[in-house]
Image (cartoon, helix red, strand yellow):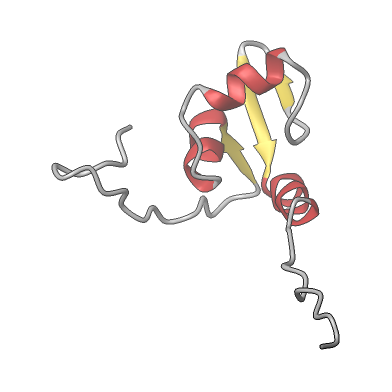
Length: 82
């Protein structure tokens, strides 16, 4: 599934609606290259996944928690007195 249009801009894709998502849906949801989840699984990184035979599923709650844990909040710059 290609999420790029003719001029190379990424189109917004609706998030999966069910409790589980495929590897491709996870990649789209997190705006990753489609192969990235597979590479991450090989390195044992990324959100938890479920292996059902040859199929891999991600629980949406796990993905959302994993993404929230990576939230970076900007810090106020240090201001020195003159």
